[in-house]
Image 1 (tube, rainbow, N blue to C red):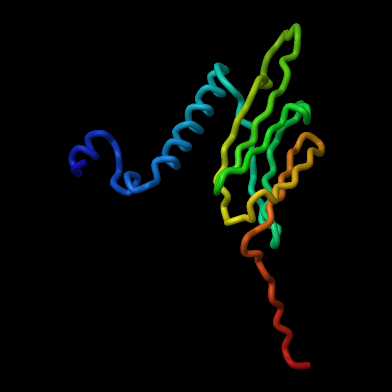
Image 2 (image 1 turned 180 degrees about the horizontal axis):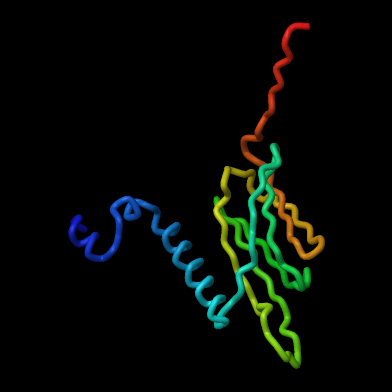
Amino acid sequence: MTHSVARALGVSLSRMNEPVLARLQHLMTLREEVETLAGLGPWTPAADWCDGDTHLELHLDVPGVQPDTLELLEDGDLVTVAGQRAETARLLRHERPSGTFRRTFTFPEPVLPNTGQASLNGGVLTVKFEKRHPTINVQVNGPE
C-alpha cells in the first residue's frame, strides 16, 4: 500500500505495522463499546490491571453475575473473560446492562501459563497470574 493510498483510507503507516490480531481486537472492543452505548449489544464490564510484584491482577467489575456463568480462558499472551448477567423481569426503567459479555485482554507483562487464580468478592472478579519475571524491590541501606 502506498503512502497516498494509506492516507486516502485513513490508515496511518505506523498502525499498518501493528499485528493484525491487535488491530482486530481493538476494532472488536470499539464495536462492543458502541453497541453498549446504543443499548443494542453485549455489555462491557470495566477492568483494571494491577502490578502485585510477583503477580499481575486483573480486576473486572461484574456485579450481579453468578459465578457459574463466568468463564476464563488463557491463550498465549491473551486472556478472555466471559459471563452473563440475567435480565430483570418487569423492568419499569432500564439503565443497567444485562446479557452476556466477553472481553479479551493482552497481558501487560509475560506470565507463567495456566497460573490464573480467580476469586469473586463484592461484584469484582479478581484473577491473579504469576509473572514470568517478578518485580524485585531492592532496598539499599546506607552505612550506620
